[in-house]
Length: 332
Image (tube, rainbow, N blue to C red; front, side):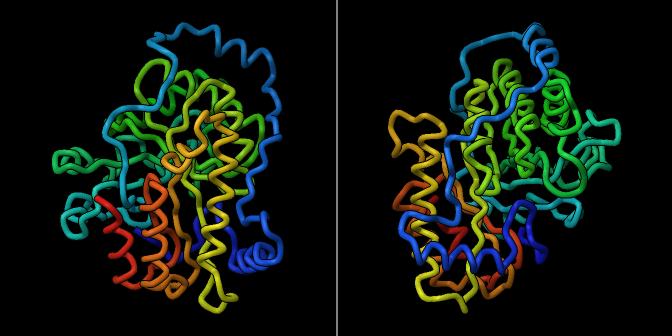
């Protein structure tokens, strides 16, 4: 599902164009350059120690999950704007099997998870259709953070309570895949979120995706890794230059993704940097419907297949039906 409003954590058209010109002018500079030297500030010691002293049923050191995970195309749904969407019917009609459902944020008390800050975890009519979707071979990731309220990691100040808030939301709909839209860049929030994820992954299998504003990605990924949590997939929100941009717009996108891949490998301390490709997803963000043509979509799907990207997605303006059809048919 795409929207006509600019997605959170994405760049305005003017900034995207400026970034594109910068890429064209200087080899090695990318729209989404991910520095690896940033270190998060530490949360106050009393809060950190209190969380780590809590009893946790440790099963093993977290490792990437071996469950059925998203592949090919993931359809983004802001459930507050599409409350009547019937996931199983949409899946049958389009062939989409995986969805990213947003957005779970903090209630006024700061530690209770609410869909768009209003609905209880079990009260979302879109997410409540997941049982049938799963019976037909589909599933969904739940998106924490994003529009509609404050990020739980920013308002729920104890990692143990934050982990419980995440668990409450996931358990309400039986989800095992969590996406974190970490767009604030605050190092204390980043560290707290990382500790909460680590606590959950020590207790249960959990597939974790981060949807990131690309200028803040490295610090978030490094902090999360250093806290002992596993990020299975990094979903890069990639603004697509308009058709009026200088020639080579998709080539500039490809170069930016290659730069991102190298920096993700370093941030995640991967022994084989090539495996970073399989941990990368790309969400093309459109400001106008015509920003992506069928040819652009084919180039992106070829790039995804060649490098083994985890999946593709769309946000922003709704492109032509042919464009979404091409992206959805990316390797099955």
